[in-house]
Image (cartoon, rainbow, N blue to C red; front, side, top):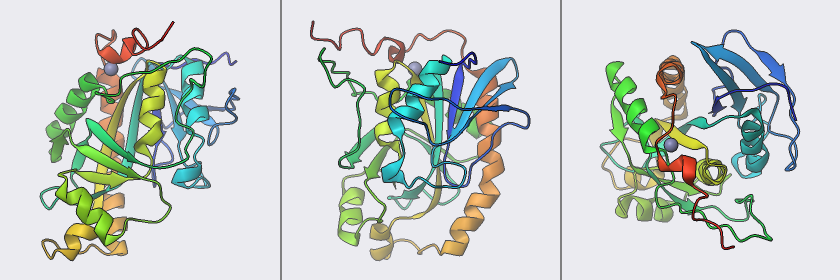
Length: 268
Ligand SMILES: [Zn+2]
């Protein structure tokens, strides 16, 4: 255990390795091993915040190798009750454009073999994942983003693929036809592990490019790697500002169902 505490946790994604200007870095061990890196503890407004880049600072953990359970459990040990999980994603729909943000309300799990629960027995624990993301924090993210002039998509489904390879055109075409919004590699199991610990989780997805399927349909232009980097760089400061502003304005008390995820989950 650690003497440090924090109320709000942030998992940085690709290209996002620091959040606060002043912080203390601490090493945390968990029953699930070590998290991806040292955790930065600092203060934003009057809130204590823990920041951890989910891939590690050297981007040493590809999406399928990230120690998701250790990362979430480290946040739990610190006392975190709300997590912000930003990431970079591909769009599956023409109207969701590079530079837009999507705050998801659903996911479709296409991963395999990841350790995706804290409850391996002996008490059977089945949380509901009908609403896997925190609705209260989603509304707050959308509101603050719109104040900044960002195009925010309020809700949407993210397909989570196993990686490290990207989707085939056939897979991507399928996802698009199903009406799903975006595709990424890290939302599962990160968000459900948080829910298993009764932690609110909100995703902020920055669109960097279009996935292969809709490009193949000729509906939109393919985006080059250089343009992806451009979108990333020009939006990094906006993502950071959005997160810092969210932290300052998060509600002090939680009325959302996330806080009671385990209430009816146990077969005892
Ligand atoms: Zn919540």
